[in-house]
Length: 84
Image 1 (cartoon, rainbow, N blue to C red):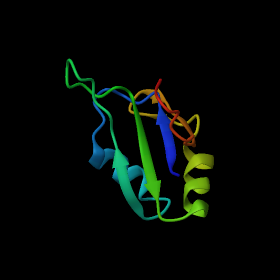
Image 2: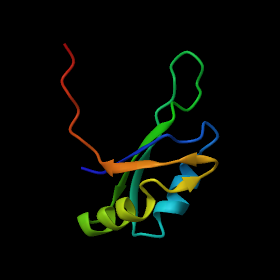
Image 3: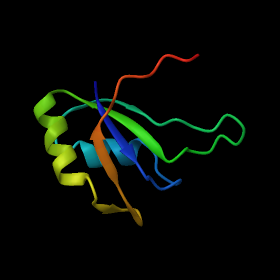
Image 4: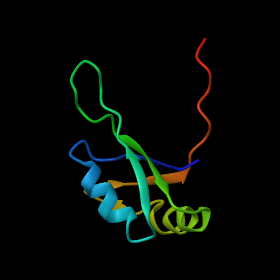
């Protein structure tokens, strides 16, 4: 399912997230949504690691940690709700 990362700096890049989460395991994918109007990062991301154990280690280590001047919110990603 992956990990949700919130309260990110608007200056963050996919490489930044690969580097930080790579310390906890093999990063399979990073999704960093951008605003349609401005093209600016929206302040959250989804990171997929190779195993549930790696995801849990990253969540425990990074949730509430200060990074790039912001206190991260890191938890298990929830399934996407269907649009109405």
